[in-house]
Structures are given as structure tokens and as C-alpha cells.
Image (tube, rainbow, N blue to C red; front, side, top):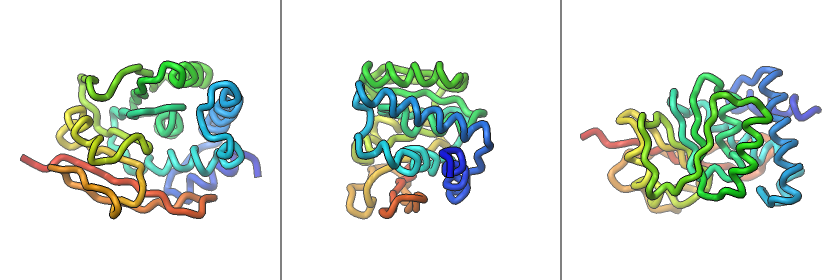
Length: 205
């Protein structure tokens, strides 16, 4: 099957409907990622051959959990999961944040090349980052332990917002304090090992 077919079929298994145009854009992003990876070391070289399941589908698995309209991707790195989510959810506004100018150089290029008008890129340190208006969802892909991230992202969320932390098995991790947390196991088509998402929200005052 073509990349587009793999993306659409895999996304559908995750409960995400992807049209032909968005599938083509996702595959164009994958091509950019591979081309830039040779000189910028954005992802593991071993991941290049399994880029669709390991990076595109893993990112898209968060789409059904998003609360929109504003989404912040903390530590976006090579634009993951933010760019795939922005392609799949064009009605939401995405801010892709990282403190690495080297990685953000690629992200800015990809956003411009793919014509993603719902994405802005921000070079900042999460510890000092402030946002107005607040975000409905914060996503983070294995940037740090959820218990360490939650105190820094809590103030960036609306009262009804949610943080989606892609992480290891949450049962083996320290749980975020003063929060409501629910773990979800994700079966990503094409990957043998299940992935986990910890969904964290504020406790009502």
C-alpha cells in the first residue's frame, strides 16, 4: 500500500477519519522529516522505515482526546505530535513550543511548506512560558515525567482543559499531584508494544 493508504487505514483503526488530501499532507510531512533527518538528526535513523506507525499514527492517536479550540504542544521537537494533529484537526489552533532553535528551524520550514495556517511556532522554555488566552489541551510526547510536567502546564490550561501526556506505563510512574488522572492504553497499528497516554485535568476547587 502507499503511504496515504497506510495513514488512512491506520488512522481509521484509531477512530480518526482522514481524507485523501490530509493523508497526502501527512505523507509530505513524513518525506520532509526523512530528508531533513540526514543533517539535523530529528528522529532515530531506525525510525525512518517505520515512520508512519511510530510517529504519524502515534501522534494521531491523541486526536479523539483533544479538547479544542486551542492546543499547545510542549517540547514539540520535530513537530510531533503537533504537526500531524494540526493536519488532522484543521479547525483547531496549535502552538508548537520547544527551546531548541535547531529543531524549530525544521518545524517552521514544514509548517510553511505544508501551508499549515492553523499552526504557530514558539521558541520558549516551559518553566517561564505564559499564555493568554489559555489552552484547552496541552500535549506532550515523552518530554518528561507527567508528575514533573503537570505543575508547569496546569496554569496554561482553562478550567475545563486537559493535559495529554504520552508516556510509559502510568502504573510505574509517580502520579501528578492535585489532579485528576486517567490512563489510556493505545494500540498503534503497525507497532507491537502498546503506548500509553495519561489524561490529566484540574481538580474542581
